[in-house]
Length: 186
Image (cartoon, rainbow, N blue to C red; front, top):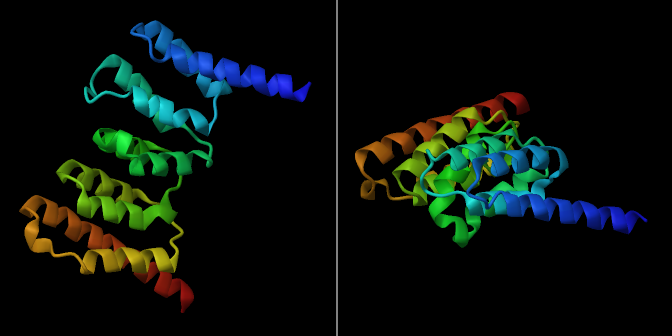
């Protein structure tokens, strides 16, 4: 009996994910409303897959709004996996934007955001700065140290002035996190 219930739920979720592929805004909206109730973290890659680079399209706005309201901590891993997924490389800025709009706590992934800020383009660096500035903590000493090492072991001369400025702001924030840890452990 329980297996049938699980299969029905999986079928319903798959049907809703099919509906978000529609060009009908009403159908997409209805599917997202139902996914808000019936979905789980497993829907995140499918939602990201539907994003386009036209972030101002009505469908994209609905999808981005949906990603930003996900509250289950299980979703954190799905978002971080999306950042590493080469299929989503062109959508990474949109994923980062969803993360900084999210109510979830991504503090444990501080080094990941520093790494993306260093390797990514200007807008990804800006998104990472915004995420890092808004991380609530608590911060793991190892993650803060790793983030600091990433920044200090990078040759900054190759970056343009704007990216350097953002990376300097990230470095200051990392220093702040280290001071918080130092004050807590004294």
